[in-house]
Amino acid sequence: MRRKGALALILTICLLFSVAVWKGAYIIKEFLSHEKSASNIIESSEEDSNLRNTVLYYKDDKGYLVPVMRKIPWPEGRGIARAALRALIDNPANRSDIESLGLTPILPANTEIRGISIHDGICKVDFTRDFLNYNDAKEEACIVKGIVYTLTEFPTISKVKIMIDGKEVNSLTYGLKIDKPLARKDINYIGSGRNKNKVIVYYQGTVNGLESYFIPVTKEIDVADNESVTAIRVLESLIEGPPEDSGLFTVIPKNIQVRNVDVVDGVAYVDFSKEIKDIKDSKLASDIVKTIALTLKEYYKKDVALEKVSILAEGEEINFGDISKEEPASIPTFANEY
Image (tube, rainbow, N blue to C red):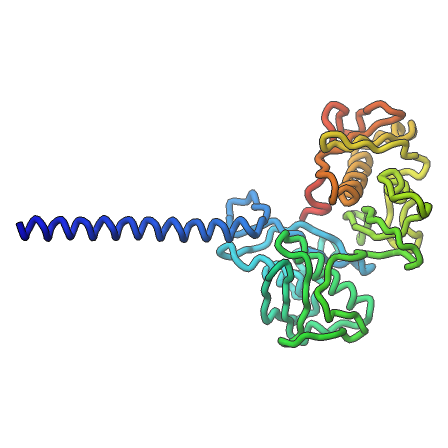
């Protein structure tokens, strides 16, 4: 009887231990799964699971911030915000990665990230003093905006607090205030500052005249006091083009008029005057659709999740370049991919 009792006791202990191990493994698995999904990063299609699609903001030779989707290393699925910032440090490796586009990293050489934390949507980043090695107020603003826009691409981050050598700083070398967490505001602003109505449109830029990229630009827009900014007015502002001395351009001919914009079931139906049918070049048509799609995506982002764009001429859907009227063009996930 004693042997049977001892055997039963041993079996019971083994069973309880197995359950505890299984339950512990399940809890750990659930915790890791939750942590991974909370980052909400778009996975790369590459076989290497340590690469992730991440939007980084570089600068061109005119000082504009340019969003570029890059596949960057993400070791063990952790520290993606730190990895994104490291890719923005000016060093030979990072420069060579994007030199064919004519873009450069925004963070000064030898900058190091001392620490980074995310809490309640605010990302605190602590840089070494090498962060301050820039030349003027324009570069200062470009660096800060590039950091803010890069980090707020992640859905868990809405604002960024910049620290230097472990200390909070009220303002930077050329007077830019950083005493409070910073949110996105007025990327690549080209206005005079006298008009409170602002919109973001997508123009194109180039460095070598061969490769071009799409740039979000904040510009002022004139509307009557009793009127709101409509999608039609935003596209009209896009077609007006950038200032002549800006170094930017739009490929939409100025003689084309916007007749209407209507959104139904995630599809934006954009109706132009008949001149839109004069465009036969497929590459030109593709660039026109992309600049329109990116601009409308920005305009509707708080209200509607746009999925596609259909081009109309005088109220009728048309084939436009390689885009068939039966299958509207998809809204780009990224402005620029590299």
